[in-house]
Image (cartoon, rainbow, N blue to C red; front, side, top):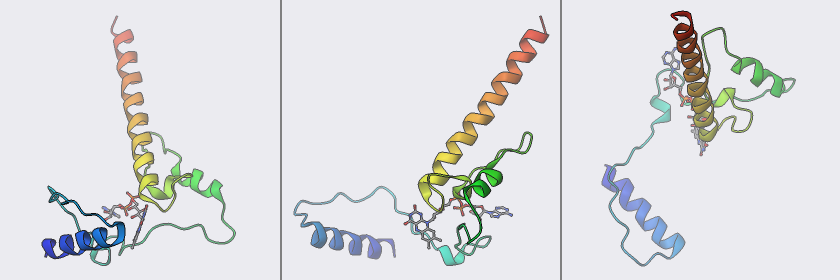
Length: 111
Ligand SMILES: Cc1cc2nc3c(=O)[nH]c(=O)nc-3n(C[C@H](O)[C@H](O)[C@H](O)COP(=O)(O)OP(=O)(O)OC[C@H]3O[C@@H](n4cnc5c(N)ncnc54)[C@H](O)[C@@H]3O)c2cc1C
């Protein structure tokens, strides 16, 4: 099945972009089946009429030690993969900072 998609993609790229050279076989391919996604059914957030970007900030605000990430938490990349990615990076940074701060406090406290 993967080779079917791959062949279709390569044919499309060659026709669309006029590629003449051989395109290397990918190491791995992933086909997303949004409709089979059990928890979301293939959905993403949207801002309905009457809402604002403030709602995104409210949604993204940490709750004590609980940090949130995902496209719905992103002001710049809301609804998109890059928004999910960037908020994931931010959340990881927040968590690392909190751990480092606590470790430093423990070190100072133990002296
Ligand atoms: C059909 C479609 C086409 C798209 N096309 C594009 C595009 O071309 N470009 C683009 O940038 N973006 C596109 N998007 C949007 C993009 O896919 C999303 O913005 C991105 O996947 C969001 O990532 P996320 O990590 O925030 O959430 P998700 O990728 O939705 O991840 C959330 C995860 O949490 C899991 N989950 C939910 N509830 C629970 C629970 N209670 N317990 C455990 N796990 C749970 C879900 O199963 C899911 O795996 C598209 C989306 C769809 C549906």
